[in-house]
Amino acid sequence: MPDSSDLPVWLFAYGSLLWRPGFEYVDRARGYVTGWSRRFWQGSTDHRGLPGAPGRVVTLSCEPELACWGVAYRLAPSAVESILERLDHREQGGYERHVVDFQCADGPRCGRWPALLYVARPDNPEYLGPASLAEMALQVQRSAGPSGTNVEYVLKLHAALTALEIVDPHVAELAALLEPAAPASAPEGQRASADEHAEPRRAAS
Image (cartoon, rainbow, N blue to C red; front, side, top):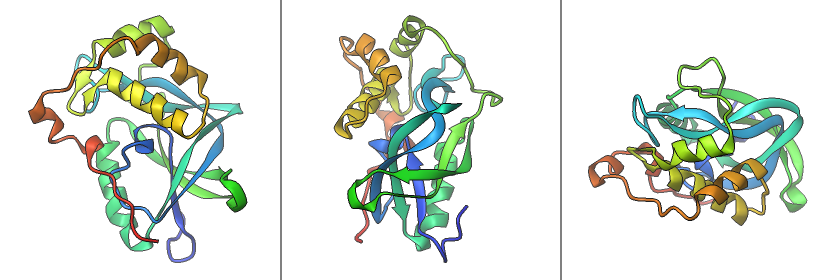
């Protein structure tokens, strides 16, 4: 992790952190990381599915010729430790922290700097791996967990990317198969305790 006393600490978001970070940040920049692609290959038994009936959420696949677009959040140095502690809990279902080079593509601030991201590697116990779009759509349609339905997750991710003017064919094609399905709400008692749905906040610059 970059030394917060010397560098701004940036966190790269490519999944649910795009629309529901759940932590304070002092800046946000649009950009990408190279060598990775976003894929619905990770199982979720704690947010968008249940043990024995996992949903599908995104992780990053190592693909040197590709790039994954998203946003990076700059965290206040004084809040880094507490934010990462909460994110470690939220992403405990197979995700690990890594440091990557984030390429900012946000107007005059364009540049490259280190950023943290969470990625679920293929050797984690929740990993599901590739499947056809039709198979993934069927699994997503029948999956729900404490944070809500899996359909809601896919459609919110697609909407967040669209708002950022980011085109991701993998997400768009899966969302197109799911859009006719009205996402149902998870039971109220489950949603109330979900870390993924903590109210996002932005700190003053």
